[in-house]
Length: 279
Image (cartoon, rainbow, N blue to C red; front, side, top):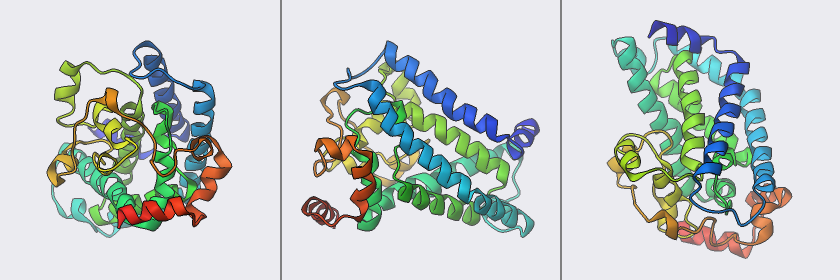
């Protein structure tokens, strides 16, 4: 356990980049072998749009990273936060910390984005994707990247997460998000037991159905237990799903980068309708 702590305390940026790129490459290959849906559009063009938003996410997190590192160093130096107050062995700190960061930095952030209209206007860019695959994992408007960063930093402070735990969580989050967005068929005998703890593609794809109430279910990122605990878990035959957002199904809404960057700042009838649905 000590070796894991030491590694993630000083994990090089090149290694974190390798995790991101390696995950996309791995699941891209698997998707080609066992896809759930056949693409109706160019897979490469679709990937290009999502990689653009992946790059903006990387830039936002890189620019703001010093805040996250400073926050983590501060809670350790000042013995602040839940994990700092509990006297637990390293392995227990790792498990509890991953669960707590996944709750505060992912589940709670995601749930809130679906409940607060101004946050939803940024998050819906992620939902406009009508051809879900592993590249969809980081399809986030730059504004949403900032929102997610705020929730992650707050979780680090409230739960007192040391930097090794933060980087371990982020590495797991990247890979699991790529996995649960992947356009792959997971055998039921694997999906069912795995889904008791982790978010699987069959579970998360339901969240990307284009209409309510399914859009407001299955908010989890790494662990499925939060959806089960808070009553936001649902199951649907994935073959019957239609991806997207019912108020933004036009071609430009999911294929024009310029259009998607502008959507959160527009006051259109479709956005008003979507906000009415949320209220």
